Amino acid sequence: MGGIAQINTLKCGLSVVTKKKCGLSVENQSEYKSTVDFQLVTPFKQGVNLDGYLIDKYVNVIQDFKGNIQRSPEFAIVDNPDSPSARYKSFKPFVDEPELVFRFANLGYSPSHTQIVAYANEYGLLGRSTDGYLYIPDESPKTPKTGKSVEFLSVWYEALRAIRPLTELWQAVINNDTEYLKTHIVWNSNAVIYRYIVESWEWSDVILSKSLQRHQEAILRTDKSDLVTYAKMHIAKKTNANFKDNCSPSVLYKDLTYQKAEIGITCLNMLGVLWFQLAKAVQGNREVLRCEHCGDVFMSTSKQGSPRKYCSGTCKSQAHLHRKSSNNGKGS
Image 1 (tube, rainbow, N blue to C red):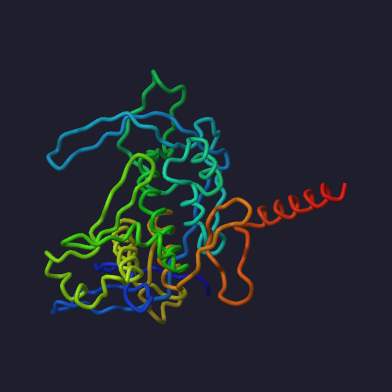
Image 2: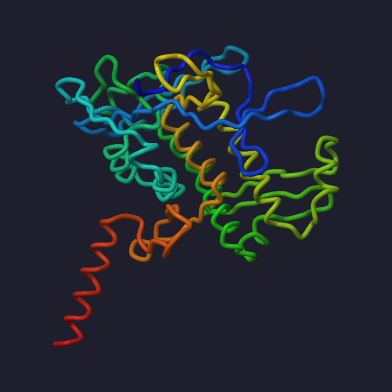
C-alpha cells in the first residue's frame, strides 16, 4: 500500500541541526540535546480556488495577553465571494513545486495587491486564515460567504520579511559573496548581529552575544572573520523559530500496513511547506541562482551538469524568442 500514515504528534522541537541535517531536537537530562535524523514528510496537498481570490477590507479582531480586544482595519485576501460553490484544484508542492519558497520570496517585501492575488490564484493561500474578523460593509462591496477563508495581508508581509532575507543570505553564503556578508553580518562591542535595511525600514537580530552564557562556547569556537558560519547560524535560528508555528514532528508509517514507524514531519499549512523547502535547500547545500531572463532567484536542482540559466520553461522560451528576434533584426 502506498502513502504515509500519521499516528501522533511528538512534543519536541523541530530544528535545523548540525552536519547539514534537518533533525528533531529532543531534550535529555544534560544541557545538550540529542538529534534524530528523519526523511519522511507527510504528503501535503494545497488547494487553490478555481474561481480565484480578491482583496477586501476587514477589521482584524485581536485579543491581547490582558484580554483586551483590539480592532484594526486591514486588507485581507479572501475566496471570491461570487464563487457559486467551493471548486478547488490541488497540487503537491513537495513534488510539483519544490522551488516554491523562492517564487514566494520573489514577490519582494511589499508586493502590490495585484501581485499577491496573482500568486494566490496560482498557488493558493498561506494557510494562516483567521476567524477573528469583522466585515466593513461601508468600505467594501462584497463579503465572503460562510466558510470562506479570510487571510490578512499582514500575514503575507510578515512572512515575506522573514523568508526573503534568508534566501538572499543563503545565496550569499553559497556564492561566497563576501561584500554582502560584510554588509549584513556585523560585530559590535558585545555581539555579532545580522542587520538588514530595505526601503524605509531596518532591523537587526543578535546571532551571538557575549552577555549570554549559552553563547560562550560558540563564540570561543568561531573566528570573528568567519562570516559564513555566522550567516548559517542566523538562517538556522530563524528557520527553527518558524518551524514551531507551521510544522510539527510526528510518528509516521511508510504505508498503511503500520509495520515500521519513523520520525517525520507534518506541515500544518502552506507556510510550513515554504519553511521546510528553505530548510531542505540548506540541508542539501543547494545553490541559489538568478534567472537570466526575469531576474528572479531559484534553486539549482542538481550538482551535476551545466547549471540552469532560467527559473522556468516560460522564461527559457521567452529568452529564446528574444534572441531569435534580436538576430533577425541584425540580419535585416
